[in-house]
Length: 247
Image 1: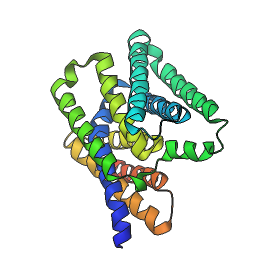
Image 2: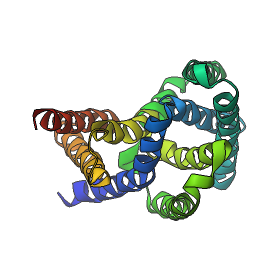
Image 3: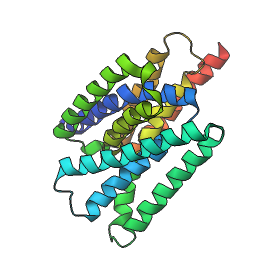
Image 4: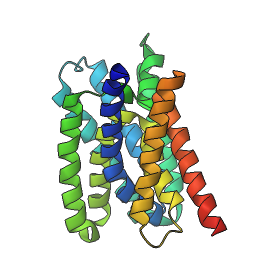
């Protein structure tokens, strides 16, 4: 039990850090109608990590973070341009951006014998193996992003919003993977879109329940943690929607 707690607690804390930024960003994404923006930015950030690995830079984590963040900010600039110039078909362009970034990543990894393992890590993450250094760095970034968001969110403009969004996703993708990033952004926001009062409270309840139940299930049944959390969060959100529909 002590061994399980030593693994589960850092993973759960990582989930709380992800939810702290992804719930407000997810609500804004849902409001703006750019649902696939997080997948596109996450994939572009992951593409930066793949490039860093191909360059043999994985032993220099600061440089890897800078490359991933630079890639994500480039993606943010592209998405801001798309939303400003082609708002009526922005989802199509954003979805295409995701597919192109994913395809380019596969091509870059095609000659790597460990490509399948790397792709799995990028998609479903390794939340059970987060370390203290990752948690501290993510906590500092999360605090900074929330301060900027709370002070300037109504004045950010297209690029400002996507830039903050990109920085948050860059950190979370490497903690929990692309699928869980998408679930953390969309499921709590979607499950509470009919909830006019105490929306944040219910959204965090959905997210926290998903992470807790998914982590426990993954340990008890020896299942992949990221996928288990995604399913648990979807179940939690679905239950809340069902209750709201009946009341």
